Amino acid sequence: MNFTLTQEQQLLRDSVARFVADHCDVARHRQLTTTEPGFAPAAWQQFAELGWLAVPFSEAHGGIGGNAVDVMVICEALGRGLVREPYLSTVITCGALLRHGGSPAQQARTIPGIIDGSAQWAFAFADAASGYQLAAVDCVAIVEPGGYRLNGTKAAVLNGHCADYLLVSARVEDERDNRAGLTLFIVDANLAGLAREPFTAMDGSRGAQLVLDNVLVGADCVVGVPGEACDLMTTAIDEAIVAMGAEALGAMQVLLDATVEYTRTREQFGQPIGKFQALQHRMADMYLKVEELRSLLYNAAILMSEGSPDTALACAALKVKLAEAGRFVSQQAVQLHGGIGMTDELVVGHHFKRLLLLSMLYGDENYYLQRYMELAEAADSSSITAAMA
Image (cartoon, rainbow, N blue to C red; front, side, top):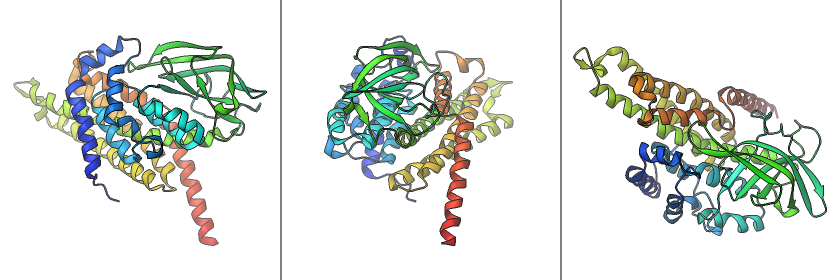
């Protein structure tokens, strides 16, 4: 594998890093938490002008035609700055669903609005009792002449409080846990019958609970093949995992650097606490966790860019490591900073909360460990079958 960034990727990384250095500090993060959208619309438009929103989309739709490594470069830099803008929800996750499942007409209608920053999107996949199972959906889609009528609720829809459009999973068939029958719909947030109840997540980001009461959508709002949304959503979530892994890596690197710097200046018994061997060992363990995540992230991003059949397995491993390493590094950072580590004025506690959210989004450590084992077992069975053929 080639781990060297191209010149274009280095320029992209430097562009995002400059924005983060100039604008993104803990004061901005705290201030945006008090606003209704939870992010800065002016900054979002700046993202569009700089071309960051266009990276994963094809040139045919006005995009740059970037790959998973390009996305990784952006998200790692954004993760360092606690950037509040909904890049993950709108560009990565919903963008992937539209790229992989949207018809040419749908893509022509929706993607330009994402690229120019005029449209916000949100992915509504979870019902209140569905846990991490994409197929466990009670939201129903009743077939109507020329379309569908949606009824049900959607929980914890990040960016759902201000999204202009929603990608909503609903079941056309009756069986709640059957993968067949699950369909994905584009829903205009202004349609009659759609109600939103805003909430604030643990990291300060915003979202909404959705209530759909006889929301009528046309047949042209179906994304992908009707009844086969599970595979489409799994593919998009794998792309989101690479972006989340990159964001987590940026956050963990900040926590490590901040902890090392703090132990150099904080004195105890007449000397910096960084000279205590026990604390040096803990920071060395933090460094190892950061590098473990970096290795798995690079592996997943490269395999995804190459279209490898091992991509899903690599993404499952990355998500497990994101949760495990993120928990360890953030906890150690708080403990080594002492009580100040969880104060609102210090960046440490804010990164801690963001890493906690990322560790649970789309599936926690146990869920993806089970998925990894299932994928690995399936891969081994396929290899044995191929060898015997």
